[in-house]
Length: 356
Length: 197
Image: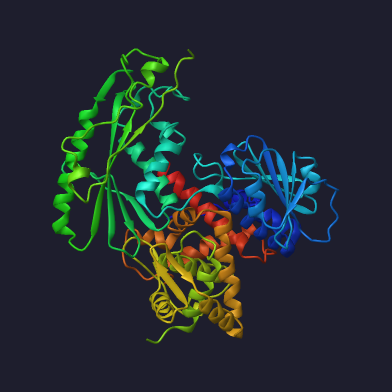
């Protein structure tokens, strides 16, 4: 059972901007916050907030009649959508939300946000962080997945394929996940040359966590790997449906133990083995679940580096990225000959290379 | 089909409130109805006061037969539409919601439904589902499948959580979005820590 630590819960509450908004401004503050949150999510949907390189402040007065330091705005728009169409790459600016749905915009942050927050609720997007300024204090909203620019920009996928493609680009490529970051040999921050010994469980947990957050309509859970003939790592069940996805995860590259010795090396033949295991498992599973629509997904975490010797502590860019674009050709190509086998997804994890 | 009037109203309210969410599935309606029910316990009500009961599926997700029946009835009557993207409320459904909302007995439920659905403004839907499965009853259901929720003695563990939550939030809080987001944040943190271990 989850232990209830009142002090821990209190620490969470004290750091919550939602609680701060109510404490500072009561019911009017909560109304303003709801309005602001709805628009912040909309702005993240409409804009490429990943490219916001400086700070973007979005605020709403708690009371329409409240006094505000005069801010000179550059433009006013009837709807937030019009602002986003005109400024598709907003950088360093301020947006005031008005209750009638219109917005004001100015380039650059002119105002003292802490002072502004005495009578407004301010959302500040700065360095890919979500910060609320309320009554002079800053509150950070934690990001569940660091690969996304904001907690308000986490998508909800309906399809597993799209979610896996997103994991590949946003999380695996640059290893933007605290769980995934712990699977490497050596001290942190790692250069991502060698996996730690037996990294399978960490890789699985990272993917399981990610899929749980971005596939809200699905039940994602790890599978007990019994033996090589039952290889599936993760099962994804769409809730209240007969759709089931079986995800098999393989890694390529080299792993090391604590004695700094290479323990395992997996080349592309490991991916071939994974494909065959998954195909065999799908065949074996069909009679057991005849009414379930099952698809198999093979995910390959590729950390191969060219010419990596046991004593290596660094790598050149050429050797480190040698396999980046080298797709694996599968024989047989199950994705082409079966209708329950998704095209394998290879996720190349970039190393940290020597400066050239 | 005879539908439970409270579940019927809750289904309308939740689908209307989640209208700006990218895709609302039937499982989301069960999820937010359950969260609203938990908020009613936080406010001192009993599970019986809620008007219908919940069970946990074999996967550990909340499910109410009365919600399922109401959704089916609303789909048949055209108040809800269903397609591959999920379910949406129609203009007829919105009218039905407004009509039912004006009935005094449903007014009080709106406080709990609004509190539960507001959580989606602050955290992604996937995070809410991730968090709620750490709630003591649902967590237990992941091991013991197909169990009734909010029954003694399990409900006592929920009251432990809610009491701690009340102490942390403070009794002056009147907007249920605050305890909803606070509790979900606590549960999400716990489950994420377990996953990382």
